[in-house]
Length: 472
Ligand SMILES: [Fe+2]
Image (cartoon, helix red, strand yellow):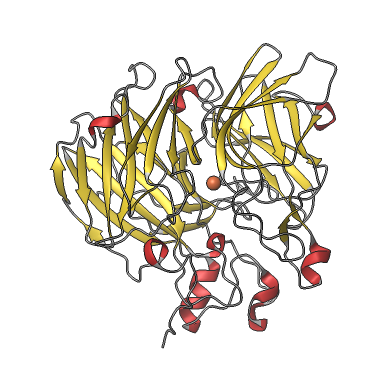
């Protein structure tokens, strides 16, 4: 008998897990789905199967994929858990055995059991494979049609260590570029950088040491440089063994941004030092010669994690703003410039991915009101970096938006000509809906809305795969 879930902010309301897997064909749609929108929008997020063992963290729940297949002006939907080792062992036991983030809190019966993670953070299509990603492990392959789990994918056993949930797709070469951290144990400062060619073959791996062990959630790649932001959400095995937080915000440590030429070696990495800050997600970065520009959602203090002594971080500091870093590789300095571009709380920056790593005009992000009274973001924003204009669509109180992804109207369409897709949770009905916006004109509201009969729990990231899926 499965036991009730504990009361936890990330297990109730819009975050509460759902307990079923479903196929829904031809959802009820208001408005008109653009005829040229043909493909599948996959989303990933935590959805624990059973009441957690030990302390629960939002990042530690079993991954569940949600797929919206859009074709012929219609939307079909399917959701499936990722059948990881953890998921299967727990289904057999009828209860949680593994703590998703802290193995020290797992059931003694599974100590030492090697797992393939929880696969709960992102989902990407590359090299003919759909990969569910979570930064502590190798990718987890999934059938793009049925969402059936295939299992860990290590690029023909060439991948050593985990892979970030935020690889970058190079729009010019078709490569997938990624890093790993904690490669000799989650709490170590050992990192890796890898390149996978457009056919899905791992072609390059290099290894290096970060200045200190930290949670490194994302990175950035430009045409000429790879950028590794190491920020003081530190990792410590000693702390964990003493019963203190394994990951904690250490406000007296500097941020260190490592920059390596794309074809460089670890010894070529230059470290730039700045004030302590945290970034989960960049929007984009590019370089103009030796000058690198990075647009990021920057927090003054890391949210969601305590200080080393377990005390809470000041919530007023744990709010992100769109910020530009400018780094001059030709100057004889190890510092860089930061400039806040907007004063709204924001997160989940994205762009027209055809401009990833390149000079770009349009970015997309989620925003909240200034004091972030709600449990999440209620606004979708488009940023015009050329004019500085930021347009916002506010869905209203109780309407929580998820990361908005851009889909180009066609391969030839100009930058920003296309659609924004986002899943919105309605707090009043406890149901979710897919909205499709005209990316150039979000203010007029959705072009189309596809309604689900249930909640898609607030999760993390999603991506688009053009063409067929959910056909079988
Ligand atoms: Fe993320």
